[in-house]
Amino acid sequence: MSWRYDLYVCDCGYERPEEHDGTCGAWRHAGTWLNDGFRDAFKAAAREAHAYVETTSPHTGNKIVSFKHINGGGLCEICGPATGRRGPWTRSVAFQKFMCAECAAGLQAASDDISKSMGVTRWRSVRPVLDDAEL
Image (tube, rainbow, N blue to C red):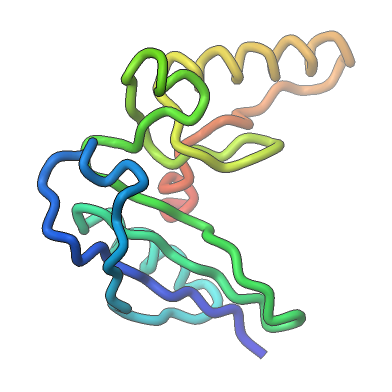
């Protein structure tokens, strides 16, 4: 049983990042990686103008989107509609979403405050998902 990582690339021909904000409807399968190949799948997605990686669990067959990429960053899913700021697909303790640098820094500061108040070691809990490919 293997974890499966399928790369899908936008085939819409859009060139500007904002054109990819929820309007893409044409996707082509561009490769499959297994198990620890997720690193290569994420890196391959990051080389495309717009792509995502879908992960399939070998245990349940459930699928999730484990990585998204848009050149220039996706519209921040926290403040973006109001500010227009963009950022990378970002991991936090609670979710993964496109997040600008300002929102990521604020969320990390809040996480640090919670850790400090509980007397536990602070750690980098908010980071671009692509960083996981470099571990």
